[in-house]
Amino acid sequence: MSEIIKYILNLSLLTIFFLIIQNNPVEAKLIKVGQKEAIKSLKEAVKVSLDGDQILLKEGTYKEGNILINKKISITGENNPVLDGEYIHEIFTIKSDNVSIKNITFKNSGISNIKDLAAIKIYGSKNCLIENNKLFDTFFAIYLSDSEKCFIKNNKIAGKAKTESSSANAIHIWKSNNITIKNNDISGHRDGIYFEFVKDSIITNNISTNNIRYGLHFMFSDGNDYINNSFIKNGAGVAVMYTKNIKMLNNKFENNWGSASYGLLLKEISKSEIKDNFFNKNTVGIYMEGSNRIDFRNNNLINNGKALRIASSCDSNKFSYNNFIRNSFDITTNASNTSVTSNIFEKNYWDKYKGYDLNKDKIGDIPYRPVSIFSMIVEKIPHAIILLRSLLVDILDVSEKVIPVFIPKTIIDEKPLMVIRK
Image (cartoon, rainbow, N blue to C red):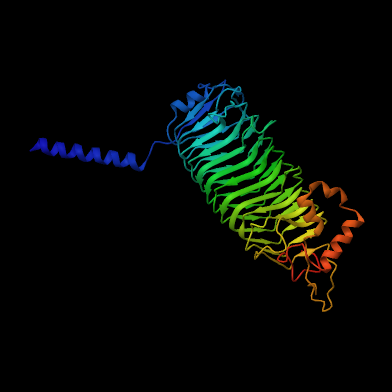
């Protein structure tokens, strides 16, 4: 009997021990890495770490090849440590949830179009944070695949891209959801930010400039918000393709010049909002093709070659309370005067409008047709642009506005604003 009692007591004590361990997990360790520390290799620190541990990377340059992170750990730099990929290696490959990378400089990642090498690549992970890092002269800088609820914040990313074929994207997101990209300074890559098959994510307060192709490029990526970003001096500002339910609010598209350059390119887009944006000094402010049910409101289109270039394949879009100021052409189109579309232009300000307002309600008393006959000639014969400031063009445009014959009947603002929308 005594043996049975002893067995029960031992079993009870063992149960209590495991309950204590379960409710009081082992405290996370701080692992220091540096030339004056016990551990001098970051790769070794990752190897000996456990979930929840913190690694503090001291000042210095580390050339350790590819470092695989498959534990829930944080790595934070002190005094700007540098991880050098020597133009050979992917530097960090992350395959764990809850990884944090902060205050580290990454440079010289390997280059490979087959393996898509990156300074930081995250595979199939959740709740990762990439913050306050510097990434210089990398192929892909930050690459996410099949990941969720990750944050990319306050990073400085600068590449040296020369051609599209020999370069890659600064921030590349593929098949991921709920990603936040915020306050990053991006330049010198193929695309500044690239989304493909990405949902329910937000890009906000980023500056994307001097990229070879696009400041932002996304396709098949529904339900995302793009707010307070600047896309400046890129091959083209932003390209949006095969996507629905997007919001583009308070962004700047500036100085995107070139023979095939746009501030914003929309192709096969629907059910979206484009509001309170600033389009300044672009070859084409907005180019639309095959897009419908988009609400364009409160945008400023200023000093562009063509403020809006809308193809005949676009339908059921609404343009209201936008300012069209000092553009060479406010609207150009390939639509004919017999084209049937239901795009609505209402209460926009047009600096070329010569109408009057007898009842002083700040709305023009006669409609405005923003498509000029000369813009349609240029659509068919681009070299005719050399006649832009000629008297002949002025006579053609006045004649067409008095008796419209060639310009599309459906592109008309019935209630043009007399004053600039503030």
